Image 1 (tube, helix red, strand yellow):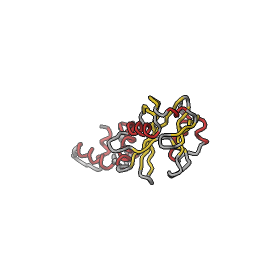
Image 2 (cartoon, one colour; image 1 turned 60 degrees about the vertical axis):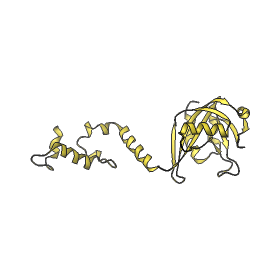
Image 3 (cartoon, one colour; image 1 turned 180 degrees about the vertical axis):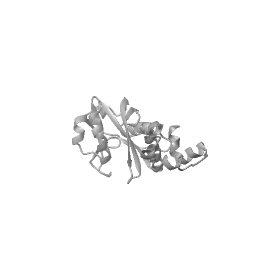
Image 4 (tube, helix red, strand yellow; image 1 turned 30 degrees about the vertical axis):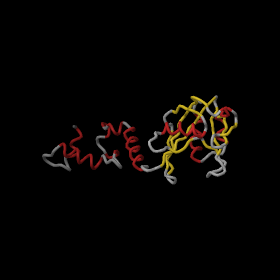
Length: 202
């Protein structure tokens, strides 16, 4: 209450505290650009003390800005301290570059189920999928990539355990040690998360 004298000049005489607070919120606590640096109540403000409020607001704004974007799921399958990667075929864009397996999320699917389907259809492996550890927005392609760690539950493609093999769609598959990922030629979006994998425990 000791801060209420701040309003005296703007609201001389009798005033409604509720009206003052609403006007204060509209002028200082704006959703787009809150003026926290000018706020006399900052020391007692829950928003200022909890940065996650700001992150939650930014996340909601980001979600609104990417409505209609295509969702793509990417799986990081780790087995015996090696990561499964796929080489893009000659008839695909970025032919010859490596990528972590995955694909598009179809209508009615959530990300984890979509990744399980893609691995089964393209690799011949049943997997468990953890929640996304990273999401990247590709503005030019209007798509959102979510990256998930996975592990093998069952194998239908018996060649998958070989150091180098073929996927069910003819793509080259290989197991790469974590330390060797940086030296390989990956898709640009995949490169952004390789450093995270290098720092994490396998």
